[in-house]
Length: 250
Image 1 (cartoon, rainbow, N blue to C red):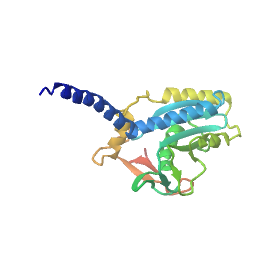
Image 2 (image 1 turned 180 degrees about the vertical axis):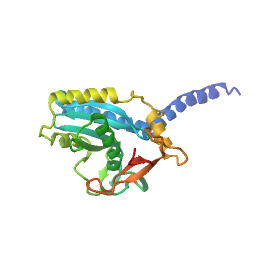
Image 3 (image 1 turned 180 degrees about the horizontal axis):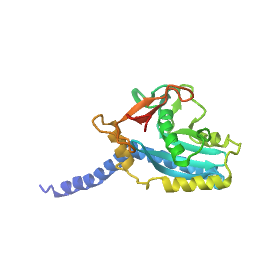
Image 4 (image 1 turned 90 degrees about the horizontal axis):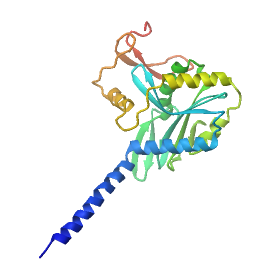
């Protein structure tokens, strides 16, 4: 019996199935889901935020004492500077402002992820250092896309879908002139790292390095070992930051 037609048919199915399986796996990867979430937020902003009023930058990577930090979107306006982080997640979300970790319930599975408000604090400090502005004019905003539902009360700056647009537009008191907005845009454009897309970008490698307990982290100014420190006094009590062992001398 000639099996060659059957072999050819099976081989043809394999050559189709393998790329399809790879594509499905790629679409389900955290990196791809993150990119889709960022694209949705970018489209929302394009449709709803006036370009002349809200200057925008996307995928902004800034230097920090322990490496780099990546900001999904920055909107600069006369009413303040808004830093937007996107989360492409489904299911139920539980978490409060002070909890170190939030919880995602997806059917019968439970996943934990870092409190995004706390993550944004480091990004705000990097923006503050780059632009040299009053921190009260910097605003952290988070939007969840992907059909997730909050099951606990959240802060006003934690939004869903296009809700971040309403939050940004709720600020109507001018705090910067047009010239100042232009100057800050230029400072951010020149102070950012060259954007590199992909799961092997320098920022993601820095994240892996920082999560490695054996990795040595050093202050870029004095070379002393970096330690996680906690602010003890108001108004930033309980916030954490990286500080060299020589702090506060350095």
